Image 1: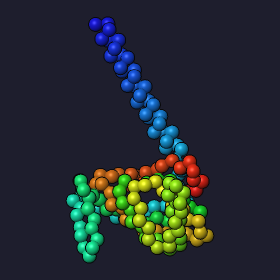
Image 2: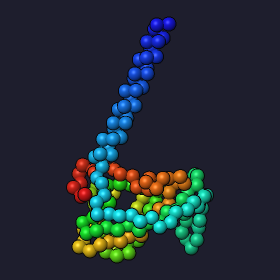
Image 3: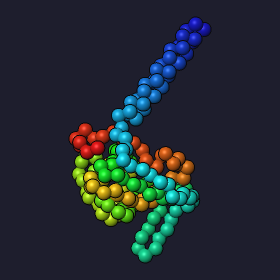
Image 4: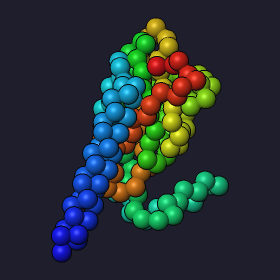
Length: 164
């Protein structure tokens, strides 16, 4: 009986250590993420589409499993403002309304946009390198029940890229 109690105590300690390490990794990862600066998001609308399977004029949009939500927001970048390194849980379609934004991918390749950007769930950074405010309209297609704070997921800055 003593041996069983000892084995259970050891397993319990091992589980607690593993959970502590996982929590620490999450906290350190969040602490090392590049945070947005000079960047504001104004939610406009959100709704549940449910099953998403739409085709029209050669365009097709489909969610393979589960229900989908659509969320729309206005994103404003001050001159020098940055969204920080991040990705999204679904597809984001962005239209640049005013100004110019520069998108950096995880390999530090940059693309300047004055109208229209499409991004997926890959890590990237969007920055206003200009001298005037940039405003973009973003439409998110995400799994239903994605929390509002989950529309953007912070990522670590890639080692080979100095863009912030």
